Length: 395
Image (cartoon, rainbow, N blue to C red; front, side):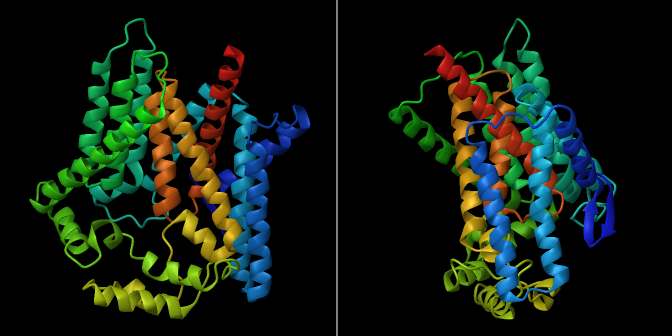
């Protein structure tokens, strides 16, 4: 995934490698047996692709746009199938493969071939490149420490240290995700099985919300006080001290995409959807909220989206949204099963699940996502399968 070539749009070498691996796997060993629920992945993913194709035909989308849109989904599916053929049904293989992909994503960013333009500022690089790989590596290291004869919760102070570093580097969402993974790992370490009764689950949910509020308050105080640097302080003031608040102030694309979805909830607007109406509507609402739009905002005629879920809904229609709602469901299920069945890698799996859930709701589906997300989803589905199979065997 590190290197790219330009054919019709941008194509990663990893895409071509995935096609080769998948072809070789089919020729030599055949495709691995479908995991429980995996048929829904292929069915819903192909429905998403077909819906986008029909939408582009209906909307008369230009070739340069629909060719990239179709390829994005097609390679996403192919990459997932190739990763399944490599990792088979092994949870441990999937864990290490996911770590490898996250590290490669950081290397890709460091070489300046990622989606984010390099600024030379370490904080920006950390937030979008190195922080995830660093945190994942720390969690795997802790898992190895706890795989030995002596298991210790104190090892998770390394994870809390990684979370603190993410906060210092102004990686807000990554701080929350790494802190939650560290807390869950700390609580579940040494327990063979946790029964999440409805009352227990409700308690954990309340504690999770409380922890989230604490995270927000900690960030707000440190950013406002200037402890995280001038850039973080300026960003906090820009996003929090307006009429939209901290969360929506950082995801203002919703100010246009939700209207586009409401106007056409079933049929999308096509690949890389463009409609100046919704772009202007967002600009008007930004000004009403006392937020100064960027030069890119002023020039863009694309329907603004900053979410896998809403982006797929805007482009492909309701079937695109259905796919990502299903992925969000299996991700949440994986997090719950991992907490109920703790092992040394629980914190890592939960961390990946939190990353994926956040991306589904709040991140754009960029080029490198069609490599990173299949690796995460492969880990999620394999983990779910391993827990369900062990549950059946115990009965």
